[in-house]
Length: 147
Image: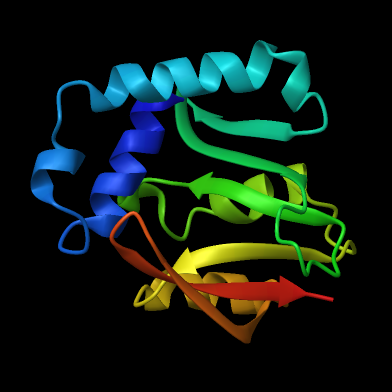
């Protein structure tokens, strides 16, 4: 899971975040600690995580949980959804999204901007930009919401 997470960041944020951060040898171990805590610590019991597999290997990851935004009018928030570029168009992303958020549930998420491919994917799944943006970890992000 950590390797897919890091690869997802490297592919999505290269050019937006410093290469030193994306290529840091400690990046994968940090993500391993993140996933270990997320999957085992009772504080995260309301989170829902899923993986997509092919040929015995993980090709995608997703996680949702309670809405974190103070002004949230939706029930779930997508925290993580990464599929390596080699898997784009495979359907893995859509299956992961549906595995962690009921397709009929209201939900919100933050997505890098610009990231036209990801934004188009979320629009296909009925998410719309709500006009809210932020700058986080060196990345411009917009909020998308499905009502």
